[in-house]
Image 1 (cartoon, helix red, strand yellow):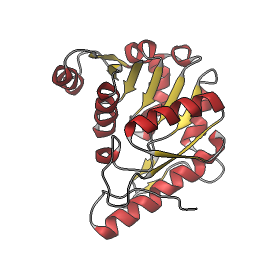
Image 2 (image 1 turned 90 degrees about the horizontal axis):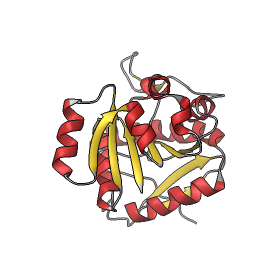
Image 3 (image 1 turned 30 degrees about the horizontal axis):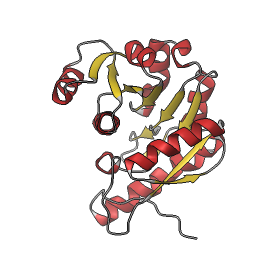
Length: 212
């Protein structure tokens, strides 16, 4: 498997390490090749890890992961070129976070979501909202007292969601399919509930679980 990670922050590093651990070849992309954090990340992993620009990573990957700030997502599409994502599974791990009023909120909400905007920006790709409802430290093989947590996903393509489900199984998660990419509205809203619960608890090692 070839994976392109777009973003050099904690989420990009965690997911990149996770994919590398399950045997994938991984390229981390940033605004320009030679980014200090991306170079250090690739060097720390050695073989099967590389770095480059957003365009380099997007064209390299058979599966692409958006792990940038939410405010940068559409700019990254423009930098990489929408055609670089055509036909590929694109995992959207971002949230449209807004801190301008002194507390975390969503900059996109109501009758829209960042996941939907991304799917519109790369219409030939198969976008799956995933990994946006938990902390970077838990993304790969989380070890929690309540057992394996659930990852809520949304996307229009059934085969793409099945592929993401197989990835999540290797990453140590159970899967809750929430339907089409329109449901990203609710998954991004779930992030706000998660953030505020974590602030009250005083730590970020919490995850969702759906019980039947």
